[in-house]
Length: 232
Image (cartoon, rainbow, N blue to C red; front, side, top):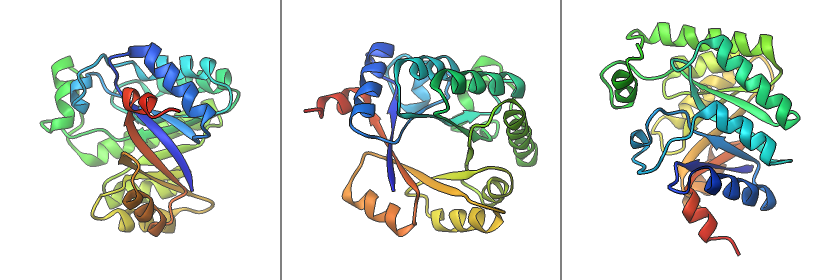
């Protein structure tokens, strides 16, 4: 099982992120994953939010071997062709180290939709419309580049979509239906399929649950400052 890291927004900004990213590469982590939010407050972080695609390209140039992924790129935030070109560009810069993680976004009126509503970005109320947008984004990515595509899901409908159209599924490790979501995606997949989950911090309990779910990778969410403070 691979161990990856996803860094929360940091008061140290880009300088802190690139330092932590290079340290993660030296320590043998599999992939660095990046958030896609408009406001750091959405993640309960009191720090500047770095834009996903800009940061993806910058990290691609600042590292040499570690994987780079989006977890998850919200399909409501950009036109499908724009995100596809951005990911394809980062893939070229990185020499083929990018994984595109996609998310269907939130329903209007929910906590996760607040940043879009304050920015005037419309959100689809019907889950079926949001799911169709994920499929359209996958198709745009397939046309633009050869990156693996995973889908973040918390419903069986989206997990089945991931199995049928993507290369992998990501779930929250402590989701009460994590095993069901993973099984749904695996059964729908026509070929090789990767499953992963994210957790806040790396603990023995997290590793044990990840192993019980037969995950291919565990993504540990951490703060830049905490990660750097643990370095020898």
